[in-house]
Image (cartoon, rainbow, N blue to C red; front, side):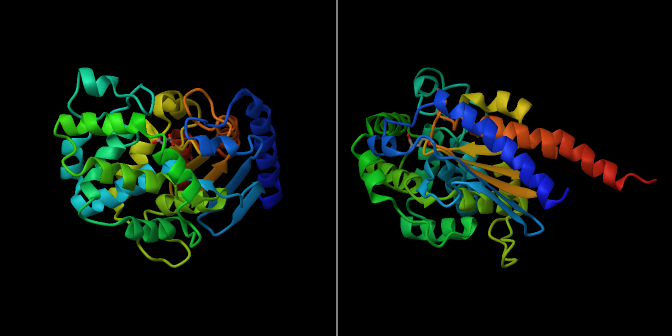
Length: 319
Ligand code: GLU
C-alpha cells in the first residue's frame, strides 16, 4: 500500500472516531482532567521502516495516566524479575472496573493483574527502594522518544487531592501484606507516573519500541529485554482495556493500553506503533473514539493478531 492509500484509510478512521466522540465524556473524577477539550482527536502511526503518518491533534500534550502502568511494569520486571512481581500480582483479566477493590477485599490476596490500579500500586511499591521518579522519567522519555515528557503538576496535584479511592486500595493492599513499602510514597510515585505528559506521537513511538522487541528504532539501542517485551504485549492484549479487554481483543486484536487522559497505545508486532489521543471516554474509562479508529485500521490494514500472523505465514509459504 502506498502513502496515499494509507492516508485515505486513516482519514476514514478519524471520521469514524469523530462520530463516536459525542457519546463519551471526559474524565472528571480527577477535576483537572475535566478541562480537556472533548473534541480533540489525534492519530499517529510509526512504522518499522521509519514512516510516520499523523492525522489530527497529534502534538497536543495530555497525561499518560494508566498507560504508565506498562512502563512501570517493564521497569519492575527488569529490576525485580518476573518471579518477584508475579508472586504478588496475577496476570488474569479482571472483568472489573480499573479502580475496583471488591475482588481483592472479598476473595483474593493478589491483585488480578498489573493493568488495574490495585496491581499497578503493588508493582509500584516493589520499585520504591530500587529507583526514583526522576530515573523513571528518564527511562520513560527514552521508551517514548519524547524528551519533553514531564510531570503535569496541575494534574498531579488534582489527583493527589482526590485520591481517596486509590488510597483505600493501597491501604487494603497493605492490610493484606501485599504492599510492604510506605503506602503514601507508593501513591506518590504511582500518581507521578500517571501525571507524565505525552502526545499521540510519543505513544506511537512507545508502541513501535514494543513492536520492535524493545529496541529504539532511531538509535538501535536495546531498552528492554525480549522476555519483558513479550510479557508486556501479552498483558496488554489480555488486560490492557480493563473490563473491555476480551471484547477489544476479538474485534480489534491488537495489544493496546488505555489511560483516562484519553490516550491509547497499540503495538503491532514487528510492524508499527499506533498512538491515539481523544479525551472523550466510554463508561469503562477507555477513549471512546479509539475503538472505531482501531477497528477500522485493524480491518483495512489487516492488523488483527491472527490475521497478521497468517499474512506473515503466507509471505514465507514456498511457491
Ligand atoms: N491515575 C488514574 C487513576 O489511578 C489512572 C486511571 C486510568 O488511566 O485508567 O485513577
